[in-house]
Image (cartoon, rainbow, N blue to C red):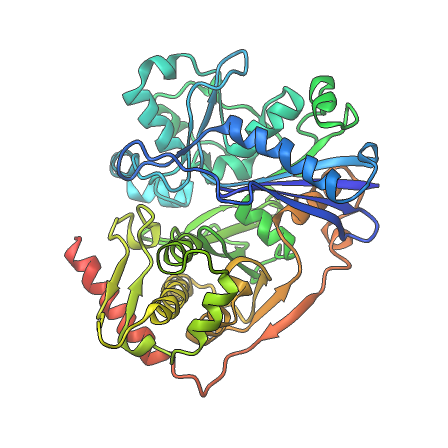
Length: 495
């Protein structure tokens, strides 16, 4: 039997066809090859067209079929991972009402802050485990306040993965994990937050049917089956935000286990069995994929908006036409610390770990007689690694003490330079796996469809391919201290 995994990223749709028995992908594809467009109608805004996600999903499946001659009728279940916190709105006929307001859009920051103040910080932190901040609920409140004609037509509020599942199945569902990432969920009552819904004036009918993450969210309709060349009735049996899904992909499911990613954004994601929260809501707590009322599993998430996006920006500006491997090789020739050049990678909207401040990206201490593009490439990757260290220190202050961090060997974790900077600035070894989110989504579908007895069975063949440990001879700590001083100065200037 085959399993189909779909990962709806900001940059592209990634897809994997996985052999259920071996747990290995027989083919993967990504579409488009270049990064998908993010629309920014105003500074701080970020939108994408969900219909484009659906079109790219079809293209990605066509690429899979072109690469490998597999029997699409052998696909027995579908799993979906998706960029978190996006807002997708449809009417009663399942027509899209506007572009999706995606995760890195900052327009609702003040709305979320007002809700935080008016609902009370203690209530929000102890019940929602977060400030309403710039999450999905606050984005919906922005639409209600600024686009009332659009709001009046809404039948259902969705996250990006719910939209693709709707296109596949013509049915709409959500989960506790999804509602918690939108900051709609009350963890004390284990129900929709009545206080938040009342504060924003939301009708409960806007929320889709709530189902477990690992369950049938619908079956592929005859129309979609014909469009995609699939068998009608295949269950969509797993839906998860990309970061909980990445943790699942790395078999990070139990308290104390930690995963990391460094794609468009950067994330450290640790699992806890406590209803924990950061007093300043700089890191966020959501229901993990295996959360249950009688077995709490929470994902503690640190997000840095501008990691891969910062690296892409530097490559596009200073090395157009060169590969990432070429710029990594060039940067490795520069000493640790980039000979004084410092880069702060915060140019992609409001940063939660900086209390939702927009401080922008910065290149500091440039010496025109010394620094080359290679220095910039090194400083970019060091700056991204230092942002991870800064956030990890916040997580440590809240009780998370990782002994090892698991990551897929992809994106920035392909870079020897970034790996060196990450491991030696955080002081935590990294286990690398030959796995990605689309494979994890496929295996999640196998769990949800009952093809696997449990997660242990689904990931029994998944093993690390590399262990990278700190090297005491590399002097990263003084460089990090210089970097953090620059950051703290910018934070103070923006207070």
